Amino acid sequence: MVDVGGKAVTKRTAHARSVVDLPAEIVRLFSSPRHLDGPKGPVLTTAIIAGVTGAKQTSSLIPFCHPLPLDKISVDIELHGSQLVIDCHVGCVHKTGVEMEALTGASLAALTVYDMCKAISHDMVIRETRLISKKGGKSDVGGGPRNAATIPPEASFVVAVSEGFSRTPFPSGKRARRRCEGASMGARGKWARKESLARIAVRDAQVPASAAQTSNSEREWSSGLGRGSRTCSQTRSVGARGGRGAAERKSREREMELAKRLSMGRSSVKTTKRQPSARQEEYALLSEDQQVYFEDVITRPFAEQAIAFLNAFFDEIGDQADFIFEVAYEVVKMADMHTRGVEYVHLYEEGSNMEFNVALYFYEKLCKTLFDEPAGRAWRAEQFTPSMPTMMTAIERKAQLREIDLNQDGNISFLEYLLAQYADYVNAAEFTRRGLNNVDMNEGSAVLAARAALEDVNERIRAFEEEKRRLEELSKKPGVRGLGAKHQLASLLSSPIAEELQTALIKAEAALRAAVRADKKSKGMESKKSSPNAGSLWWMQKDLDQKKKMYGRRRK
Image 1 (cartoon, one colour):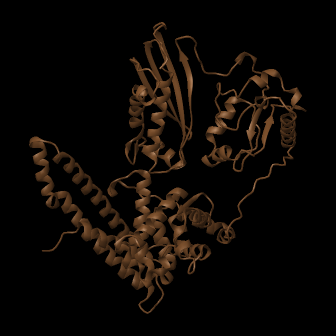
Image 2 (cartoon, rainbow, N blue to C red; image 1 turned 60 degrees about the vertical axis):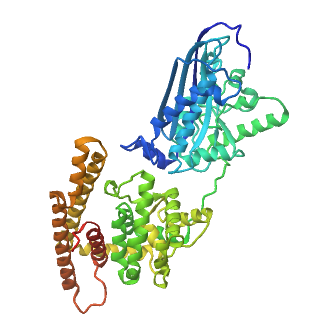
Image 3 (cartoon, helix red, strand yellow; image 1 turned 135 degrees about the vertical axis):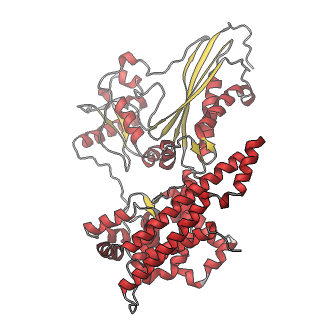
């Protein structure tokens, strides 16, 4: 190690920062009411602890670092758009600086965020870890742009033009930061990957005719976002690339020419747009009423989407309804719960769609359930051949998901999965046509009463499970309180809350029987065609049977 024995003892401080780019599904996790919890537990709290621990262990991790008696360590984490900004401040009174401790703390906190959230998505990017400031000792290091007093108001910016990113020029550092923070993860990823994209310099009002008009102060200035910083890795000033060599001058002149064309509305930068699939083109040909109906259905919970699908195609797909309810529906709920970090079913509020990464996870779990687990053997019977997913690689599956996404909104609804899985028998045009006809006919009062009775059962189940969970937690405590909770837990099935659940199950069964009788009467006994409510009644009966099996009173 370097000998610091002759140095003076002074107050040393350092500030380091790490930035983590988060995909949309993780941003939603931080934006939800349970913004601190991930699949492994509290994300930010764990990351802060890891950052403090890492700063204290710096000399053990980095061979030639001096062990220091640190007086202060603080780790602050904030969410800005889709970026998690981690700041680590360290201080001590000693003969050497603490910048390595600050950098280690910020790095360990960022790595911990990745570890805590990797079960949701691996698309996180730890984008940069850098020293913001250092004070004490021979020299100080501070943040901010170099030669700030010489920054010209008309300083140029270079913007990477990429598919999915606005081509509108912007001249100021603050606006650049907002644009980059508000951009999608896909756009930022393309900036980082496509090094060959054109960089276009734009001024507030004028574009210099040649690189020679760029002032020295512009060359010295980097981005206006802090020394060495890059909110987008491709954003920098025209002069930052230097002016040496004929090749570089020609490159800058080409950039100026591109900027001129852009400012005149004649940019030659071309972006390729993926052509829609045949099924997406078919969806685009639907009438406005049909598209409105389709968009309405895919915003409903998964179960309601499946019911609408079965109501429309019960005659064609009725023999696959068991698979849809017992396998596909259960797996999509499990995937959604896994993504949200929900552990208990009674606390789960059913979702309506899946982002592509979640849809990949859904298909992975569906294939594993059917082809790897013993329980899947029964579903591989010839009867359920139309329901079997095709095994494929992740790249092939992503391409398939793009085709399944009929309205091209970047999400896969349960309805879109069903229409794709049974595409040999159904299509979106026929679904919307039949659905609009069924809407006009409306559900009868008996069906609505059965729905209300089942919802009451769901409320009673939630209350029962919450009480059970509360007593289980209390029973783990020592003393009289824990013993009393154990006795209450043993007698829970005969408690008033359990009796209310049994009563609700009986009422729901009676209401559903009345709805089935009313539906048969309205359809006509001789009609072989299923009624418009066939899917609703079948689904409610399966749902009730499942709840009776789990919560119904067992006969001795």
